[in-house]
Length: 387
Image (tube, rainbow, N blue to C red; front, side, top):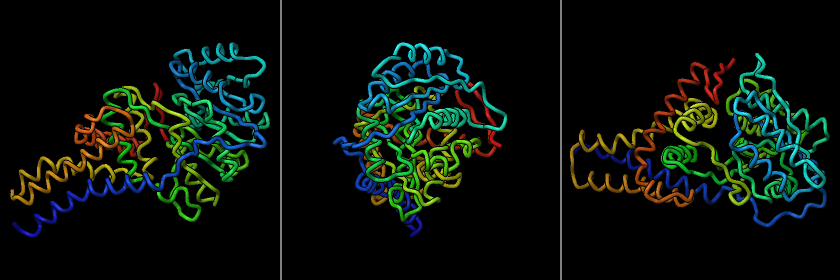
C-alpha cells in the first residue's frame, strides 16, 4: 500500500479520538453550579421575563414552578410576554396569573407584543425587550430571561442569583440538563450536542482573560446595569442566537461572563419531534457555532467520518492494518455516543445509531447554511427575514 493510504486512514481515525479527548477535557473544565445553596444576606429584586409564542403546553406548569421558587416573593416579579400566540397562550397566562395571585406569591404580569414590528426580525427578542422594560420600570436589580420549555427546580433562582453575586457576573448563563424523550431527540439532538461540544469554545468562556464566549438562552441572568450597557435586546432585534451574541458582546466589553452546568437546578426538553427539532437547529446552528465556516467545518468532519466508514473500505486497498483501524475508529465513535447516552439518561443502544445521527445532523447543517445565506428563518408558524 502507498503511504497516502496510511495518511487517509490516520486522518479518519483522528476524528473520534479528537472528539473523545475534547469531551473529557470539557468534563474536567466546565464548571458546575454548587449544590449547596448560597447564604444571601440581601435578596436583590429579580425581574423574570418569559417570552412565549404558542407555549400553551408548557406555560401553566412553568408558572407554578416559578411561583414555588425558594426566593422571597416580594423580590421576584414574573413577566409573561405573549408574542401573538395562536394557541391560547395569552389566555392561559392570564388565568394562571389570576389564580396564583395573592399574598405570599410573586406577582405575575401578562404583556402582549401586539405582533412583530417591521424593524424587528426576532419575535423572541422583541418580547424579551418588552418584558425587560416593564421589569426595569418596576425597579428590578437583575433580569432573568428563560424559555418556556425550561423546568426549574425550587432552588434554581436562589442558586443562580447567589452565584452571580458571589462571582460578580455581568451575565450568568445556566446550562440545564437536556431531556431527550423521543426517538429523533435521542438520535439527532444527541449528535448535535456532541458536535457543539467539539466546536464551541468551552475552555475560554469562564476565563476573563480569554476570548471564548458561550451562553444558553434557556437561562440568562443579567445585572440591569450590564444589560443596558450591552444594548438590551434592542441591539439584538435582527439577531438569530441572541444568547451567543450577548455572550460575545459581554466578553468584548470586558465584563464577566460565566456559563455553568446546572443539571440539579433546571431541566429542559428543547424539542419535541423531528419537525420542531429540524427548525430549531436549522435556525440557530450558525449563530451557536460562531459563523457559517465553523458550522460547516464542524459538521463536515463528522459527516466525512461516517461516509468514510462505508467508502474507504470500498475505495482503498484492504489490509490487516486498515481493518484494525476501521474497527477501532467505529468502536471509538460508538463508545463516545454510548457514554453520552448515560449522561443524558437515555437507553444505551441509541449510541449504536451514532452514524445515522451524524448524517442527519449534517443534513440539518446544510439547511442551516441555506437559511443563513437566504436570511429566511421559520419558527412556530412565523417566517421572518433578517435585515
